[in-house]
Amino acid sequence: MASCGNDGKIVVFDVAGKKPVASTQVTHALHDICFVDDSTMYAVGFDANVYRWDISQSQPKVDHQADCRD
Image (cartoon, rainbow, N blue to C red; front, side, top):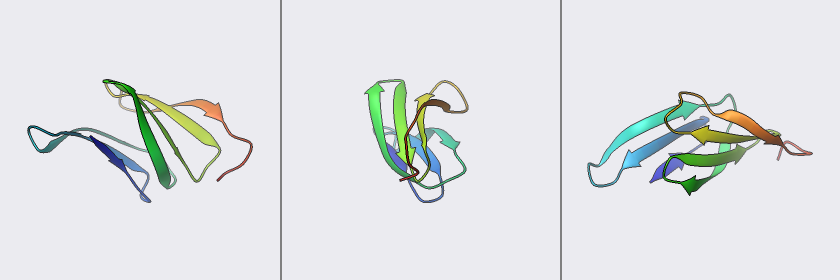
């Protein structure tokens, strides 16, 4: 399970252990996240960047850019 929010933070949780197992942060508010598989997710928010995050890495990378910031 994962969460994101207005603070730009993404947190991945171990549901069975009920605790965070990974986190990262971008510089703007995030709106949606989507798991691609067990270790990769996409995140978008109020910026033109579409982030791809390999959870084993510390920072997400810009995978695409949208035409607008919304």
